[in-house]
Image (cartoon, rainbow, N blue to C red; front, side, top):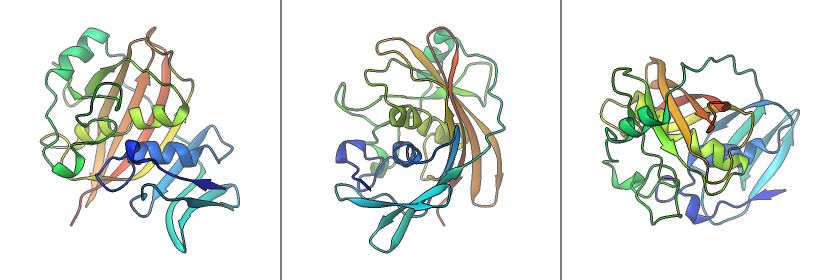
Length: 223
């Protein structure tokens, strides 16, 4: 079994978006909730081997372990629903990516229309530090949902927008995929920190307010 991450799905300029990569790997684990730990930046445009490891899998680039995935328990509750109007107001408070490394990110970067997700999370007025963004999907496979609930977490734990932090681990459950063309809301909130590790929760709600996906994240602050 192999996975190849196309350049379209980059997060940093030279590696795959973390949430998208986690979602692709999670497909190989038979569990409702899956924990994916990224050991190395997932390289683009070359085949990576998927190897079974008990109930989980490892993603390999030659002998190097890129990521590991296993069944998990999520144990996370989302905050109360953010309305679409609140999400639109939050998007207006979005702080653009400052680092050139992330400016073309598939999820939160500046892309041509239809090429990226254009999920630009900002603080919800009156509900800080809760962050949110509206999203109307044009493609709805599971790994796209994992991507959608990735980057908003970085903004929720960043002092000034996206920052330089990188995704280290993501534990998520996808309850259902949204409908194409139906407006959704992505939310994100901080869950504490421990040294160079900062923690976030993220969620995706459908057009009717139903919970579609939920995730806990570990972000790593570079030395």
